[in-house]
Length: 271
Image (cartoon, rainbow, N blue to C red; front, side, top):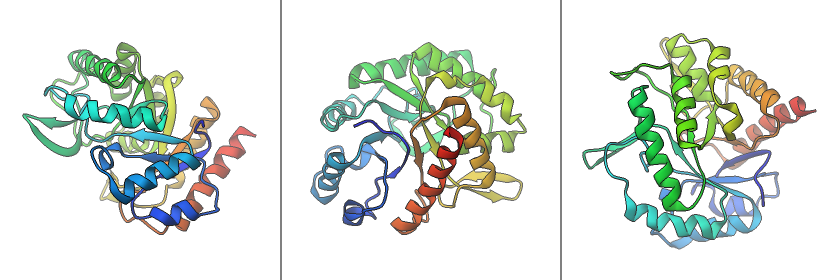
């Protein structure tokens, strides 16, 4: 099965309710850290979901840009799970989460430099080799520019994807937030990204803290982000789109209502 349309995240809160719903769900995306080395009910739901819907995988802790060695033990456990479920690729974030043996579980931005391009690209290629799958990386939000930065964010993302020969998971909410917070031109940033490498899209809500926008994943998608999403669909066509709700997780029907609204935008543009 191939993912297309608009999907939602496979969250433990939904469990059996999701498995029993008759509403439209085009695909599901799961976080592999919730399942590697674990069994029980959640794993049974994951395999049951794989029988009904296409699955995409999105990791949060491989730390593609870290100076630490890759966690080969984790990757060696992850590989058979991904192949067993038949996911088309592994996706993670273009950032680092671990340093000095400490796993922060935070998406820390890299310096946007030529050295960081070479380092992250080499690690992405290594991750792909170990997992025996293509890899795509997500453009993350950043609230401070790291020392050593030489490039704009979109140019950095492009350089890494080209050097690693990997895909891009385009998060349109993150793109909007970064441009708003750092005063970048939204269309210029979009033009610089390697859109020909986009394999799927993330869309989510954010919150304002004073003049700064915060990547929140706990609110409905804003009208401005939906407008940006429509522009991306006009450029790219039918790319699978994942609605993220990771905090303040509402009832399943509320998430599916929002997925329906995003699907309506997608269909209107494609028509």
